Image 1 (tube, rainbow, N blue to C red):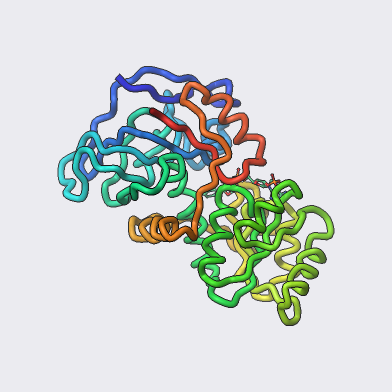
Image 2: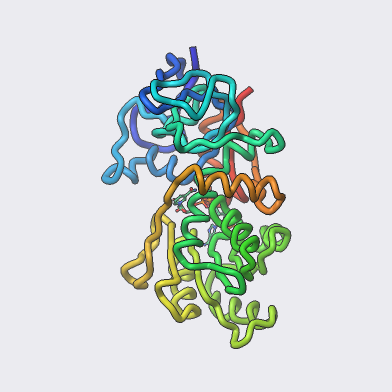
Length: 312
Ligand SMILES: NC(=O)c1ccc[n+]([C@@H]2O[C@H](COP(=O)([O-])OP(=O)(O)OC[C@H]3O[C@@H](n4cnc5c(N)ncnc54)[C@H](OP(=O)(O)O)[C@@H]3O)[C@@H](O)[C@H]2O)c1
């Protein structure tokens, strides 16, 4: 038997239950993974609360969790890439990674390097691939100055590090308790809230950028402060984008961005991690039996880096 977090009605973290279930059987092209670690994302909360209902209705009993790392323990028909016993990481085939066993499409997985901790490997793929896709689509390259809103969060902290690795200069927004963290990962920290554009301008000037130029803005916070400052600072509106669920893109005429996932892109992120240029900062690891506590912390909206379920 296996355990899985499920919910059978929409609501807060209190609707979550840990239930015993048969391990799922892999279909064509899939493997089953004995999950060792699985990250949490705001999208998991949106599905659980019903806010995703129009876009992705729950199928009760609904499972959660889109990213994982673990050991392949069953292989479906037509899978040549992986064998039982291999350590892998990547996206789950459908929400369900917050469980002892989950299914994944073999073409989306990559081998987990032995030097990467389980907790980091299980929380890398979703936020990492979102950050990488968005920076690419915003044309971020060496020499650019990039403003990243929500820079201490899951997507933001990975976006900062990827942009820095690409040779960009990064200004990141966060509350003051996260400013040293942002410096540590290579960003110039700026406090969010009213007056943001002026503070960013000062920070960019202090960093010695001619004309206090900001070339692109990537938003993960979705607030009016963040979006208004972005359009004030970045001349080319096509280089402003957001992934934040609540962002009013019509009002500001900016891009709503989405994720593309591929094993090739994930392998590049794993290589960055192996080279010490991309860390997955795990604020806290939980057991599956602590699901309600974990989701309560996620819903608070102030996670530094990532939260993760860690199984033995
Ligand atoms: N995770 C993914 O893979 C993914 C994929 C697609 C879309 N998205 C969307 O992207 C958004 C961010 O996701 P995430 O996983 O990065 O979330 P997250 O990790 O939960 O974000 C938490 C961070 O947000 C910061 N924050 C809170 N209020 C802020 C504000 N007003 N201005 C700037 N920063 C603020 C917090 O910093 P302080 O504590 O310093 O305030 C905290 O570090 C969500 O809307 C999510 O649905 C995420």
